[in-house]
Amino acid sequence: MSDITNFIAAKQALYEYIPKGTNVTKYNLDNITKLMKYLGNPQDKVKVIHVAGTSGKTSTSYYLAALLFNAGYSVGLTVSPHIDEINERAQINLQPLPEKEYCEHLSQFLKIIKKFKFQPSYFEVLIAFAYWLFEKRGMQYAVVEVGLGGLMDGTNVINRPDKVCVITDIGLDHTKILGNTISKIAFQKAGVIKHENAVFMYQQDKKVMAVIKKQAKELSAILYLAQPDNNYDVLLTTLPLFQQRNIKLAINTINYVINRDHTSQLTAAEIKNAAKTYVPARMEIVNYHDKTIIMDGSHNEQKINALTESIQRQFGDTPITLLVSFGENKISSVQECMKLLRKISSTIILTAFDIGQDEVRAAIKPDELEIYAKQAGFHTIIVEPDPILALKELIWRTNGIGLITGSFYLLNVVREVVFKK
Image (cartoon, one colour):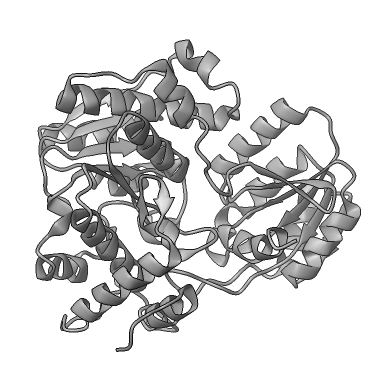
């Protein structure tokens, strides 16, 4: 294969790994385990913090990495999906690799795995690349966000007893794959826990806790219930409520890690600096055509509830106009999500997308969403299938705040326009 020189070429090279049509990725660890062994198991040569959960995974991952970096340690970070560009999945000290450097490393990596006799998926390629890169760059730590679930997720190939697991709030999501009860989903998330790992989480639903405690006991893992310490509030005043919750979990975790490895603790200055970390598409506020626009990737009931509470707290009775789309895989939670969004707005614009990253992903048709919007009691409902035209409609109608939410894939489309201006 020829050398990859830019992001366009990188995405073209990776396209062949995206499952299409009936060729859906099997949800197991067979391929990724073989691939990592083929690469020399780089995932076991870096100290890893492994982040699972339903809500808050990405933000918590960013804060974990930021706390480590501000405390003076080198850290790799991999998250998914990416928001603006693919190099977000391979960050060194909170910086996505520059295009030229990213493409050089990816080109080298893809040449290596071309000789691997099994066909990995897009997600497996990118997570293997991240592990390979972090070892190559000599990172002291790697923060790794689970893609889907945990037990059979492609990230779940780390075999070090000093791995630290972080489990964020668990709720119903991806029910067709992970199970249709909170206990079944918790079992999948708990699958990241391995022998003698330390596990950090908040106290959650008793069904969730029963599953996590059972897994921890069976594997001689140590479960730490984090405390949302109010002593940190003065350092976190710039963050919305849900992000304060996420960073406090990260603080609990990193204080344990650096005390274990370096007999030190985070300072107030390190925490304050980490709180300034840019987390894309999480209640991200921008000015676009002289309108205040909030972009947030919340896509299930739990996340949208946290988002709407934070918006109400920060903006009070400011009028809000919504631009919304949901992926087809979110159909089970759309009705409840619409009810929550109705609490902060009476005007909604419904649109669609037809893109994907780890697999081809389609949106619920706007005409179908309209039914749910009517049931939720929206007064004004506009259906515009084209997301770019829907964005123009949002700007025209916004007389206060415009909120774009429901799917990271919708944000993938509109952010290209918003940030080009």
